[in-house]
Each structure stands twice: as C-alpha cells, then as structure tokens.
Length: 333
Ligand SMILES: [Zn+2]
Image 1 (cartoon, helix red, strand yellow):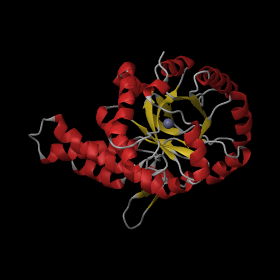
Image 2: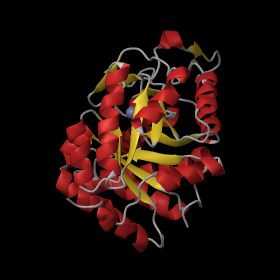
Image 3: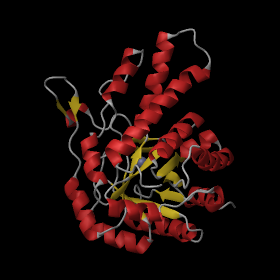
Image 4: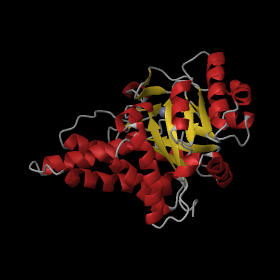
C-alpha cells in the first residue's frame, strides 16, 4: 500500500471547492504514455493550473500500474523542476467499473477514483458507489460517481444512446453514497464521433457539422437540487477541425468527426461544473503531428522526431484548454 500523499499528489476536494467558488473548471486530461504526461505537466506548470491526470482501466493495463505510480511521482518532481513551487496534481482513475479496480488504484497511490455504476440499475449503482466511497475515504481518496448515461465509445465503455441525468435523483444519490463529485449526462459524449450527422445541422458555408447544444436546463436543475456540489462533464473534447483536416490530408480517414463547441464548455466551466474531461483532442493532436511527419519525411524512423512534434502540439493544445476554455490558469501558484 502506498499513499498518494507520499508521491506528492493531492485529492480533488480543495481543487473543486476553489473551482466552484472561482467560476472555473479543473482540466482532467487522460494519458497513456510519457510524451502525453510531459505535455500535460509542462502546460500545467507553465500556466500554474491545478490538473487531474486521468487514467482509464485500459490505460492502466497499457502502461503498467507500478510504472504509473512512479510516473505520477516523477510528474510531481518534474513540475517542481519546471519552477512550479507547489504543484497541485491529482492522479485519478477514469471509469472504474468494479470495487476491486478502485481498491487497487487506492492501494497503488491514486488520489481520486471514479466508480462508474451508471449502466447498473439505480439501487445497484448506489450500493457499489457507497462501497467504494467507504473504502476510499479511509485513505482520504476522493470518489467521483456517475448518474445518467453518456453515448459514445471510451475503452471498455460503450453506449449507443445517452440518457440525461434525472435531476430528481441527485439528492438521494449524493446523500446515500457520500460521493465527492458527480458526473452527469447533459449531451456530451465519448470519442471523436460525438454525434451522428443526422443529429447535427450543417453550416451552409463550410459544409461542416454543427452539433446539437448541451442540455443546460438539466445542469441548472441539478445545481438547484445540489447547490455547490462538484459536477463533472465527461466526453468534452471539441474535436478541433484543424487536426481532423491535417489527419485527413496526410493519409488518415476521420469523416464527419465532431465534438462539443468550446463556447459551450466555457459556459459550463463558470457553473458548478468543476472538472472537464478531455481525451480525444489530445489523441487528435498527437496523431495529426505524427501523420504530418510521416507524410512529409517518409525516411524518418527516429521516434523522437515524430513523438517530439506530437508532444509540442499537445502542450499547445493543453495550454489553450487551460487558458481559453477552462480558466484554471494561475489558480495553483
Ligand atoms: Zn468518461
């Protein structure tokens, strides 16, 4: 058993309380490899933004749990080396689906875990979430739960259709489970194909898809039931068209990829939404940069020569999200 405190990490409690008061949101960036981690830490250190390093069950298997623990510890030290005196870095499990995987993460140095029982019947979701909360809270690890179903694909999580969170359930759920934050479904979606073309309208000038707006009425109703309670948005990548275009122009094939417009996320960040999950945008930035090098320099075979530009592109993307969308810059001096 290793405590996250020994690794220099923090849980989400104070981060979220400050974010709600301050009208901004904490970025939760998923990572799977060293270059992504370097880019996240560099962007956070340079902007002095609190940050959540997010690892899915699949990413944990990909990277190895022991290596991950030391990568997180290394991230804290790297941040200090970059001149960030008091780094506020959280290591969070994204979409834990069993008590066992959540317990294992708590035992391996995670400072926060998500238990996603959203596909279960309501009472079973409560029972599972409560069990995880009771274990995690013994070690001061914070717990995110989910009510409502997001559409889309993320690792093992696949849902055809979304079901908005029912505001009438949230008080009962939060009270009985004791969870620290709640992921809700208001129309965001996992992956780079968040909406089918028939759900969108088309811009007559550019021919690009315009997605349907988020259900802010559901968010407002949830906030009215649970004033000041930390709310989380999953599936909140914007799928920048510039990256999709670079990928498609350099041998890729991502037709009609579409995300959540940034102005909607900006609006959400000012509310009780205090954690916004971004994964696909970083994947797109990485892939666009790598494809460009491969296309322009077919003789290149040094991974540093294509992972390096990918890392730079992701750093630029993360800084943009922190400063221009979430407003979390300068919140962790
Ligand atoms: Zn998610």
